[in-house]
Image (cartoon, rainbow, N blue to C red; front, side, top):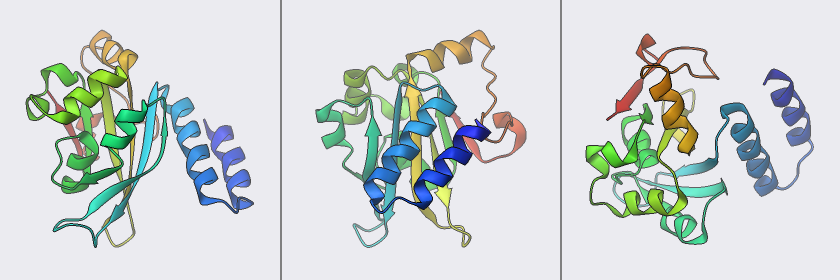
Length: 171
């Protein structure tokens, strides 16, 4: 993972196209997190009463899902909306069993893309304000979490969720 990040940093340093940078970051996150789905959103404070997230890059998403999550309100029920609102990492082990997703358009979007489990991590500026979110997920994540008795280790921080890194777990 470290070598992948080092190679990516060299590539991005010479990248003139920001869209290309975001796509490379999404691809790296997919590899590092062993995910089927990855997306990155950027926070726009001036949109709406609490701001909105705009989709910057997405991998393994359907066109209708990309349209659904092109702009996400901070009060949205999708995991990136919850992460944006709470400024905490959100881990959903099974979208079908998560109360805040029941009956929502976001649950239908997760079903359409085949996402059963996912996490959204807010990326914070030094000021503590949210600037972006990164979301990863797929079918294998839920199975891996259940196989480990509900225990996960974050591949980035190498910490368990209960270690106090600001993780909210659902269901």
